[in-house]
Image (cartoon, rainbow, N blue to C red; front, side, top):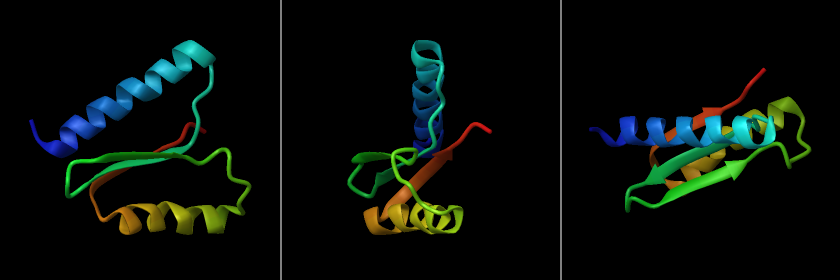
Length: 75
């Protein structure tokens, strides 16, 4: 299984568990760096204008030197 598929599957399970446990699906960005370390940043705790939030979503993977990343949001 590829790293991207593993990240997607793990992220999907985590996201589903939040809905089941809390009834809430938060916005978040998650990824894996070249050393295999995973990072996850919740976005709902940040009070940012949508344009600033979009820039932050691009900044985090770049800053972490991500080799794969995902962004989760529920409308």
